[in-house]
Image: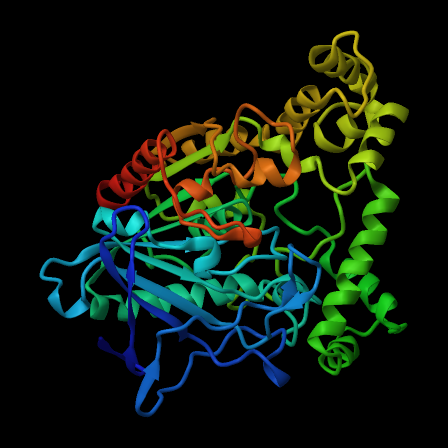
Length: 476
């Protein structure tokens, strides 16, 4: 199969859905930007140039450089700005253009990719839509902000934007409706989508949005004081100056691997020093100092006033808080035991004189007369579901003030494919952890565990989820 886009010709491949056995058609590893290396590091992406001949789009390209969550090894490359397009019919045979769904992956702006291993289109493709996944720069390379043109911040979001523009311009060649594009994503992907809704640069590119367990108004969505945090990384790397231009040039000379290791070490030290007291140091979206062509020139609350109205589908999972049961769990338990008020102080707006009263009420509500310990697992899950995600609904109420039609869901199914519940805990028997809904939209082969045999009740949940998501994409 050969499709011609503005940059040249692509040759795709054929797949077979594990859900239905139906054939579908994929164009993989399509470059949408020049490699963001050398002088393009920390710069907005530059559109890919035309190529000669036929580009092989039968295999996936590299993910963006990151730590492999299976074994801690470094995987990927800086040359990673690619997207994948999946169609239910050969593009040349599509008579009526189909709705387009573009998924932006999550992963705390540190992990993930558009790869079939995590985002196989085997389910959604059966519902007469075109499915697109993409990569964007992560971690320091994607989100370092030094407040200068050479490093203005939000490169990862600008990558997503260029990919969306590429899709808007070329998707008709694959049988897609360029005037019916839905963007959707979970966690950091949902935060990204929310930011596209309000960014002045993203207007007119898509028509609907789905937010899965994340909004731009969540407390941990944006990096505050990004320049100060960038220089913390500089000190870890041995840079002692305070000139952002000198620092940017210093960073350009570092290998991507060295930057990644230093970034993770800086964040780890900061997190362990402040656990229970503050959100971790991280590199994620931030308000830009350079306002010209800024993706995020102001706080999201202020940008809503000029945002383009569109239908939103949004929701949470019932046991989101399971994600706190990570390597830091013992430290977290200790910090809660020592001073429960700290966690309330950092997460709940409250007058200082009322903190103790409020924290006592919260502790009594969740734990009753029980002591806080690792065995109070369900109580801790519910506590952190509230602390980390309670302002999700506050965000949606704020959105509705600007006349956005919002459709709400809650995902609480506990089945064989609740992969993230299994990662964070071994003894979960009910409910859905953060990101547990994703394996019911996409076929996955995560962490070496192949999901191939699909039986009931998982099959019904997949059909229900895909039907609702694609109905929304088709009709709003």
